[in-house]
Image 1 (cartoon, rainbow, N blue to C red):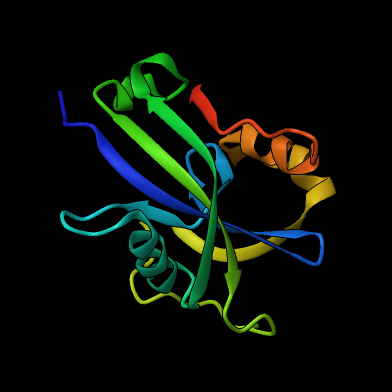
Image 2 (image 1 turned 90 degrees about the vertical axis):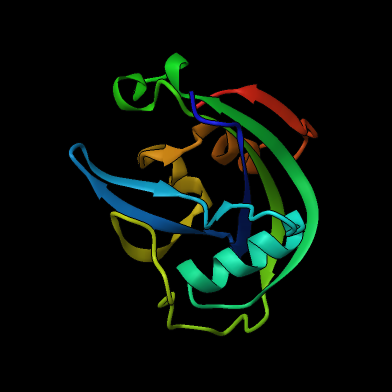
Length: 152
C-alpha cells in the first residue's frame, strides 16, 4: 500500500462562480479543485500556492481552512485502480491575486487536465465535480463542517 498523502486544494469563488480544473477521462468531463500534493518540508498553504501556479497559472492569496476530506480509494467508484490510495485533502479559501485574470495556463498541468473553467455555483449539481460534497457545501452557507471524512 502507498503511504498516506497530503494534498492542499484551493476553493476560489468569485462573482458566484467556482474556479475548477476540467479533466477528461473515459467517462467524459470531470471537474476538480486546483491543488495537489504537499512536498516534504512545505507548509500546506505554500503547497496550495505552488499548485495553483502550476495548474492554473495564477498566484493566489491563501485564506482560512474550510474543509478536510479523506479519500480512501478502496471505498469508492474508482477502487479498481485507486484501491491503494489514501489521501487527506485540505481545502483552503483562496482569492486570485489578480481578480481580473482571464488567462489560466499553468506551467505544469495535471495529467488529463484540458482546461481551467469558471462554473456558476448554481450549476455545480449538473457537472461531475469531485468531491461533490464540497460543491454542495458551497451552496449551503449555513454549514460549518470542517472534517468531512472519507467521501468522493
